[in-house]
Length: 278
Image (cartoon, rainbow, N blue to C red; front, side):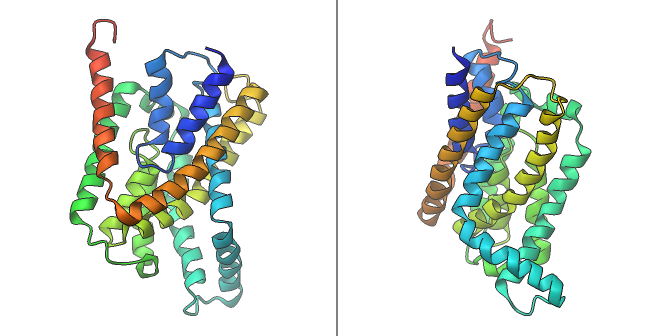
């Protein structure tokens, strides 16, 4: 199949699954594996980073009004050395604190670890683990608090959950939304904080990996056209997925995504057990 079509498909997959709690990184491993695609660039971490930058742009565009409040409020709190009961100042520091675990984990994990976990059987196992976390959050979360009730220890807890999602199959949105629900947040509030918290983490990862691409350290030769197609399709699909999730979680539980994750994991194991699957 033409690599431009592969890039389009992968971009759509990334954009949708980054915000729907089914694991974008897991799907970026499984889709080429299921379809037998073996293009070095499409399968590379560098292309994955480009797709994530597309969803980063979707986040920035969707929440631009929030960031126009949060960033000046955060800077004002530094100037005044006070949060002073301002919800936007508090939110700026909640996001900053919650971002630290993901930055630390990203800095510590090596490329060898990335290669190890980007394998179909491990992704399938993590899909099941993520499904269990979502199910427990639905079962145990009180879901009666909005984002204003989030504390600094709570933000750190969500940040640690986001760091765990560096393992493909877990899902950044899934595990951080679950963490928010464990803290008593409503599904929509947990999703909104999850999406805001993802923004600086994805930006930092994109800058770090983008440096490798520009320096020729990514191990692949980027194709500008393929990269552009993936980036744009990821951006557009991401905008749709953000709106869908925030609207969906106002009215519905995560049951649909729990079932999907388990069925996808079963499909992976079924293929592996076939005579030609290994």
